[in-house]
Image (cartoon, rainbow, N blue to C red; front, side, top):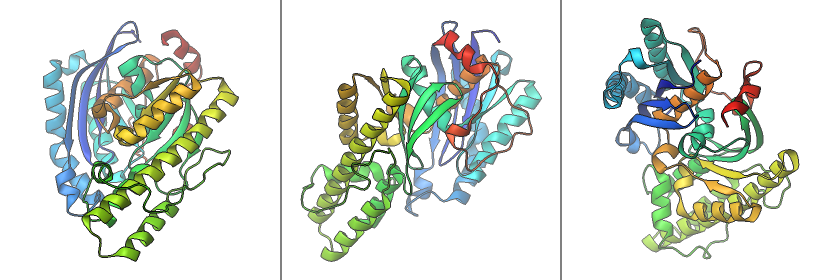
Length: 361
């Protein structure tokens, strides 16, 4: 494979229909030529969360147009494209099928390699697109569907240091917003209310605090919040603000404790991390961002947080992961199956790929 390459990336794992064209330059840096994202927030808002059937139908209706728009904005035709990448999981299986099947069709008709990308790997590698972050680094991945702490040692080489035993952080924010009648998506709305609230009014738990492992558990916090809300119902505007402030502070404290444990595990196994990378929509929360800065300073690491539009689901991260894998000769057959579940640490790179990774750090 030549060093300079262009990849089309397709993302349909949840409620964003996205496509992007990304170029990998000869020195290993990336350049986004286009990044088109069509959100389905309005379609799901009335239900307080993402409805899988609605999401899949929406992907079918607009994906072709989104891809065409991405290609047009990039100013490239398929002759200039070196590979077709699509998120093959994990995610809502209906949406994953739509994106992966479309990518297969394009790859077949245009005679291009297919790269079936793990959605979580795309998040994990985005820091290399935006900041050229060298391996290894510690990744804090927090979104509506995932909360994990990982050692990112190379393309296809991930070690999970911690994960959630129940709700993801973003999911907990969304459920809190729904409980308090704030609407969807919940994260930004809880954060806005918390700015006007008293975080000390309610005594909420900090699950898993002080444990040596780096796992999370948030269902107990969510239940405690519901019980506090029921005690004082009906809720005033100030009650809602105080509950949001208390919940957000509990999350901040949990992230600080659990991620610090994860960084200690990273140091024990792989040496001091030079970079702490945050990915996923939760990284946009300013209170959590302050904790990440504090932790990075404590361990002497650089905090790397991609721009907000690249933290949430997007096609550019899929295209870049496709570039990274294609540069190592890692492609997939047209019978590759979509996967609703696909743990990141189960990815196995082809023999020799990890050794070659060092060539373009």
